[in-house]
Amino acid sequence: MKSQQLDMKISFSDGGVRLNFRGIFFHENWASIQEKIDSFAHEGIKLFVCQMDHVEFRDSHILQEFLDIHNTLNGRKARLIFIVQREASLQFFTPYKHIFEIYPTYDNFRKQGFVRALRKVGVAYSKKTGIRISPTTAALVMLLLTGWVLTLLSMIQNQSDDIEGSSQQVR
Image (cartoon, rainbow, N blue to C red; front, top):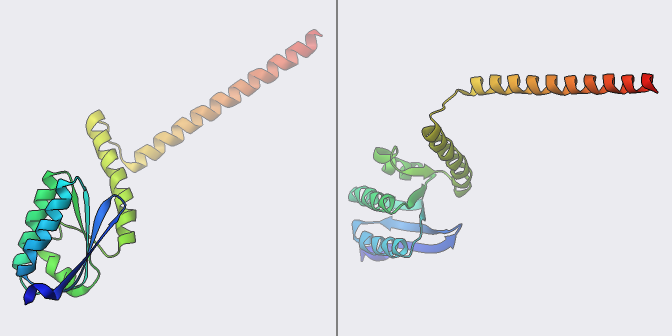
């Protein structure tokens, strides 16, 4: 039976679900996988990481099914991440690589996830304020502000020295 040729290991980490697939992926496997993902999504889980390196895809319709579940999870404010390093698996996801989040390792995802979150905050901030400047302009503004602060500190130090000198003359 085809459905017995795909193993799925489920583990929980970092507030999400990791689905490690191993074996041959047929379209007949999809119903049980979709049921699991839907049940986790109904429980409020927002992160689904699918490890796909040890999978051989035998049906092109699976890609459309992943796209459908991706859209469903996006509607629930959840993310579907693929960990794929093997070239054959990467080729399978090529038609939708601009839609899916695909990383070579879980560590790369975690590092990119932090940078991506920072970028999202920056984009949201720039959309709220309307202020958008280039990194070069930001560096020049920081340099200018640093110069002003140093000038202010040196003026305060000079005045402090002048006051101290005047108070010693009065004594």
